[in-house]
Image (cartoon, rainbow, N blue to C red; front, side):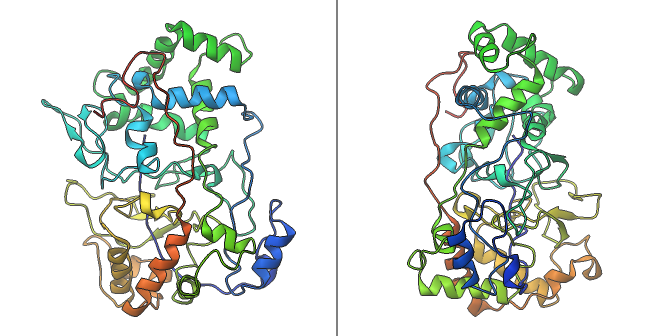
Length: 397
C-alpha cells in the first residue's frame, strides 16, 4: 500500500477566536469548556470519539473482519507476495520504518526488507503514511469532515479510503508487479477471490447482492477495517477534553511554542493537518534517480498529520529526515533563508514556511509536546491465517 509519508511538519501559528474551537458535531460541552480555557490554542481539538462512514459503506463487524483478512492477504498482489500489511504492519503502527518502501519482489520486514534478485522493480518513491486515523482525513478545525471526500496520499490524488484502497493494487512498484497490466489486475484479483469458497461465503454474507465479490466491495471491506484503526485518546486528547493533568507543564509550553513559532498555521485541527498542499523544498532522496515533483509538478505536497509520529519515522514525503530534530532544523534553515532543494527556488517556497520564527531553543519543548500525540492503544490483531493460504502479511519473514 502506498505509503508513508509524513512530515511536511511544523508550519505556523495562528491565533483564532475562541468560537472556532470545538464547534463540530462531536465536540462535547466539556471539550468546548476545556478548549475555551486554552486560547489561543483553539485551532486544535481532540479527535471525535466516533468515526463516520460513507452512506454507501456502513460499518459492520463482519465487514471489518473481512477487510482485516484482505488487508493481510497477499492474494491482492500480482505475484501473491505482498499484502497491504507488508508496509502497513501493526507492529510498526501500521506504517514502516523505511524512507522508501520496497513493494513486490521484496523479502523481509521493515528496515531489513530487500529486493530479491533478479529485480526490475523500483523503490516506491514516497514514504508510507500510517493507516492510523486516516478515517479522519480532511477533518477541519471545527471537527467537520466527509468520509467520502477525505483526501488521501501525499498528493491528495484520490478521496476516501474506498478509492485509496485500490491504488496500491494498481501500482507497478507496489503490489501489481510486472506480470499484469494496470487494466487487468483488478479483474485478476477479483477472479482469484471468487475461486476461494471461504471468501465467496464471507463476501455474500456482508454484501447482499448478486455479484458480491467485486473490486468495489474489496475496497469497501478494506476501508471499513481501516476506519477501526484510530487513536482518539492520546494524552493530548485527554487534555483537550479537560484533564489538566494529562500533559505536563513543559509539554504545555511546547504546545504554546508550536503555535507561537508558526507550526499551527498548517498543522491545525484535531489531526494537525490542514490537508492543503505546500511547497517546502525538502531535499531530494538520493535513492531516487528523478525529482519527485509532487502535486501538479509544483513540488508541493500535502501537510501530513503529526499524530503518532513515533511510528512514522523517517519523515517527509521522501523519508529524508530520520528524526524530529532534523525536521525542525530543516525548517529553521528555510526560515533563515537557506534552500533545501536544488530545483525549488526561494520564491517558490510557501510564505508560511519562510515566516516561521523557529529557534534551536524551541525545538526540544516542541518535540516534547509532539510526544503527547502518540498512542500505542490501537487494534493490533492479526489473522492467524488468510483464506488464500498464503503467508499472512506477505513475504516478511
